[in-house]
Length: 239
Image 1 (cartoon, rainbow, N blue to C red):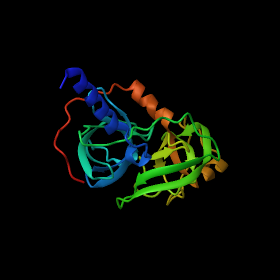
Image 2: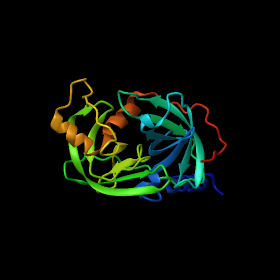
Image 3: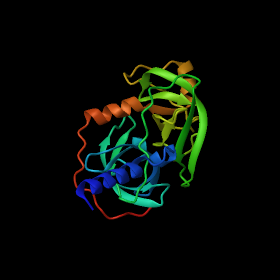
Image 4: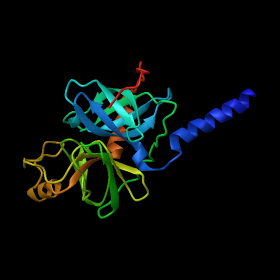
């Protein structure tokens, strides 16, 4: 086969593996860290062929460094490494994982932004490993995020384990990362990121909404944080 034809076929195969389907569910993965499970959302592919994912930081124990990622609704699993922890500043952890040749994933387009009343859907895995696709609307938009970086509230029925999954707009663009479900088991005072106390009315709205982090804030992390592939294990792992 001529070299330029082989290169063209390789490029076509690469494009197919990355975007053969626009199904947002293929952008959401299941992650195991120790004995805990969470959801994660694929953000980008690196030059070296690895993938970067966003996960809700509160889903990981403080000492977690290595994780196992179930792609394609857990039919294929690959090891990954935690490369960024946002902590109390922003409830996001970034994970890097090797991209297997036989994987088909969807790297979602980034939403230009959502507005109050707009239809969305929340996609993530429950703690029982069930992939959920919950529809809803944007119920709250905060100009100033609250501690943890949360600024988008939705009416979607987010369940335990879906934190780290994606919020997608009506055009299936990624608008946010799921962080908390509505109606927490206990009430507590809520503060803005600048430590100012959140007014009571907004606190009630936050408590009754499933909160998410605006994807633009997450993309900002990618731009400001140096992402290095390093040496990632090639062996597959098991969920």
